[in-house]
Image (cartoon, rainbow, N blue to C red; front, side, top):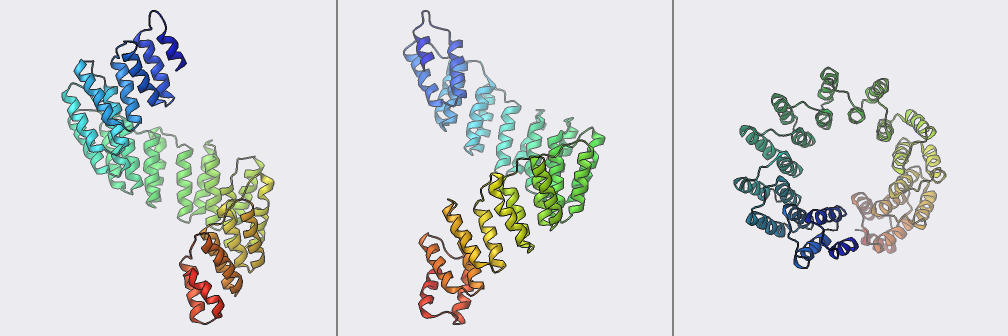
Length: 429
């Protein structure tokens, strides 16, 4: 604002080009309301007429403020003044409509503006296709591509990639391959993102062989798999219970001098843990610590959960109580997993102490935490203590989950609790 005021007091006044540069800078800082105010001041107080570029900036600001209606008013002014037809103006309005989910209106706008002499470009159609895919309308997106091709309009690779990626996430691999073949027929060379999207789609559909076939074809197409390619496949092998294949692919990755990143190691740690390869997971964790990788609480929580599930409570406890020395604070999931592990091994007192410590450390227990401790207490016939936690849980606005409710119903039906305790259990139900 200070610079604008200084410019406003210059004699002669700076040109509209200079004002546009300032307005553009302010818009990039996301001060959209300020830009609108300054344009009004520039025109009314300084007598400087906005040009096509100024009005384009104005439309952009209105769209960012979810005021497409005002954007259309500015567009009408552009048409009335007979300014040169800039595709950037159309693209801004199309993007604004699509961000608000008004895809049909965006399509209609493109059709109408084409009649006014505007020429939609790859950005225009790419924006609409991306919006269609985001709401799952991949069929409409494919139809749009075919119509554009029939009109001899060549789309860019990003539009094809968007459709392929969306279809892959929906598990529609036959349609994804169709679009893949379509782009090749049009002379558009698939890139690494195209291949990664297809591989991810195959993996999501648990069609690992299809993913590997595409992976093995990549070198013949002069395509080098990147860390995303390897991470996707390694994770998929773990998810279908093939840890050995996952590790073999890791070794291939390293042999090809593609360096694993932190996400790779997180996949490995989680995958080994899920597949009960706990010795390998602990070795990997040690390697990650030795190489000073930036491990977070999620990495340790996954391993603690696996150790508790495998009955290796002592190892889980050592990991848990070492977190503070690593500068990490257990989160609600870490605490709940540890409490469940302690209850499972019958260490009820320790589980209750950990719950109190959790609450005192600023990490408030949630419904899952309370249900976990209550179930542990009930399993070990600690009904009186269970009632105490039921009271706390209810007071905090939480309720019993299905497992807790079933356990309580069983205790009541079997007359395993006295009447004074039964009334507390009624609160739980």
